[in-house]
Image (tube, rainbow, N blue to C red; front, top):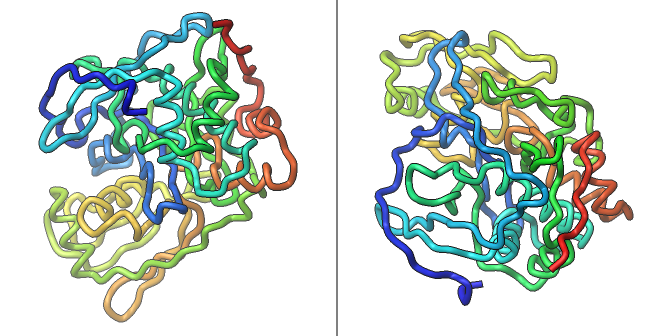
Length: 338
């Protein structure tokens, strides 16, 4: 893949939260780390449930206008080195960063099409910085391609999910935890197209189940680092949405005294680590020294469930069938002639 890189320039890295727009959110269990942890890395902290973030529109890429190359901002030191990479090599590299090891070919192919579609739908996301997409969690994680990721990218070359003749605005996460989510429930103000519904999904079987116990002192430190004033006395779930995910919590002892579920993930992740609160599908219980979060799923849950896709492929589902399940109504473009 490195054979197709060409150095262009370096720019300072944008500050965290500079673009309040959704990104991909997957996880790579095979690498033992979160590959794309919440687009909340790019979200400002909302201190009131009534606040919202805008989702700026971008020029849509027509299915017949798929570019040969993309400009990627590769994190380097305190800035980005802008490199031009062939689109299909980019897809193979992101697939290596987002998929679990030993994933079945059909699941890799489904994810490759989703990754390519996401890249084109978000092309120019970093236009102000001089490139299209970054190689970090804000966009899609780029790693060294593997033989299986190269093969999946090659087999699906040029194929994307199409919405009214253009690359669809699609998303994916590590595990939906048993129910997919609508975009507006994660990114306030985002549209809810019919191909991104919230509905039960038994493919991932609600995995992973997780527990995280955090002390009051650590939670207070994380909240204070994000601009909240006070000291935590109690934490309560105030409201859930129709999918069961937590959308509002009460912060007793702090000002402001409310926080959204997604923003609590961001607050904790930025200060204490992203491995703690893996999703907003959780129960909350007071403990002697703090609070126990017990939940399931990993990531925002919008769009394709990477874990579910892998299990569907293991049971013989094709890439096309997997994509039809997670993006109902979308068509897959035909391969481009070369």
